[in-house]
Amino acid sequence: MNIAVLSGKGGAGKTFVAVNLAAAAGQATYIDCDVEEPNGRLFWKPEQVRTTPVVTLLPEFDNTKCTGCRKCVDFCRFHALLYIRETPMVFPEVCHSCGGCLLACPQEAIREVPRQIGVVEEGTHGNIHVVTGILNPGEASGIPIIREALKKAEGLTILDCPPGSACSVMESILRADYCLLTAEPTAFGFHNFRMVYELASLLGKPVGVVINKEDQPYSPLEAFCEARAIPILAHIPYREDYGRLAAAGKILAEESPEAKAIFLSLWETLIKSARADGERFWHKRKFGKSGNTGCISHFSNCTIGAKDSPAAVDDLFSVSLWEKIGGSRP
Amino acid sequence: MKKLLILSGKGGTGKTTTAAALARLFQAKAIADCDVDAPNLHLTLPQKGTPQRKDFFGGEKAVVDPGKCVRCGLCAKHCRFDALEAREDGYAVREISCEGCGVCVYVCPNQAITLAPDVAGEELLYLEDGVFSTAKLKMGRGNSGKLVTNVKLAMLKHAPECEVAVIDGSPGIGCPVIASVSGVDLVLVVAEPSLSGISDLKRLVKTAETFQTTLAVCVNKWDTSPAHTAAIEAFCQEIGLPFVGKIPYDKTASLAINQGKTLAEMDGPASEAVKTIFEQLKKRLNL
Image (cartoon, rainbow over all chains, first blue to last red; front, side):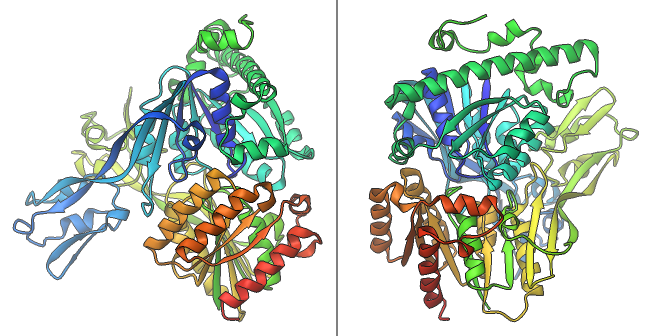
């Protein structure tokens, strides 16, 4: 069960929500997919840390075999290869590692060598398995690191996504079963929320909303959600003390019983919403096009969509989580 | 014309709020929003007139002609992006996974696959009052670095005579950020006084070093954590980065945004602080 936490706008509280949601559950896998700015680990301070390098493949030339035919240069659509002064050259930053130059070379003058672009770090914090993708500064694309980090998803998994709604976000949520959209109640926050909502809908994912840092009501956001039947699962108020604890790298759900209660009640509403989505999907499959769910072709990547009944959706959440939210399993 | 870029590393530190206020204070006639993933600058600097619109072609996507597909599976075997899937009537391209490398086109024995240009976003250019260049990347698309470069070039091409151009950047340290720093005279980093903010500031500084960019640093909402603000100041001093000011938390900022205004038109402690930063930047830009 993969729950992706995303926001569109940066700083809306993705990491804050993702970390505290996992902490409130007590037992979970937490994966930081924001590989450009991985901050979850600053809160978790994981122990028994081990790192695995992430590499991409880069072409390397055997100059004795290269005849200068430039077939590789012509093939490469990313302009990663150049042939100057009778020598082939590679620009690593723009290479997509597609392997096309190897296929195109008639002399077998190219082989691939690994190049490290970052790491995946794993550690533990109590019963939380903390996985962090970290991109090396100066590298352009963190997608291969996100892919590696996502392989560690196991059991109840929280995916802390990058900001925006471009390729790295999509990569992070492709296999998500549920998208939890964190929205900041401002004009900026609302604008970016709509973009990321569009992406989640495009991929046919069930969605729910958390309004974070609410210091004054912002009605356009709530009206938008109401008009589209997007459930608002929680309102988290702007509070100076919460801000201070978060700034200091503290996990709120572990510091304050009151805050923990907010996140446990978020779990409750989230499960309820996932259940309702399961039911909708089930109806849609059974009766065809009725119901307002997303595109059914993506259901292969969504376990909620694949379940046959609300009760089967309930099974996706761990026993310990049910106990935490008061054993109220229907 | 001097080019000032606003970056932050961490998202949500106040890049756009600061950029908009500085654009007003510098009376910039050339403005670009390079946060093509989540462009917001137009919300706080409303533009007059209708923009010139242009499709952005990020790259190409493979298309399989089902009539020609012989279902040999070579395309799927060679595709490194898992973008080809076997369906009942032959292979089909998963558009969202395809990077347009052309390997499938090359290996297909029956010329069943071609590459078609892909509209990955839209470039918008407002020319009523100076130039305001912005863009919107389509959902889930890559190649945002290329779009950032286009947005910047469009601004430069139409820029009238003026002292300063203000460019709003994206969060993070990846391709859109790298594309935005090239050719700018000064980067103002808006840092957040938190553990996360400091970590992201350091990663951004490291990235900027790779590209030999000139940086200046300010802290936003500094009073939410004076201790972290002090740590940022100390870090800047240690590595010789100019620290140009700190902005207090001020509800006027979100009020301004929700009204489509900037801090430059408001009164209050945050507005005062931005004006001090503006004076500092003027000196740094030799104006």
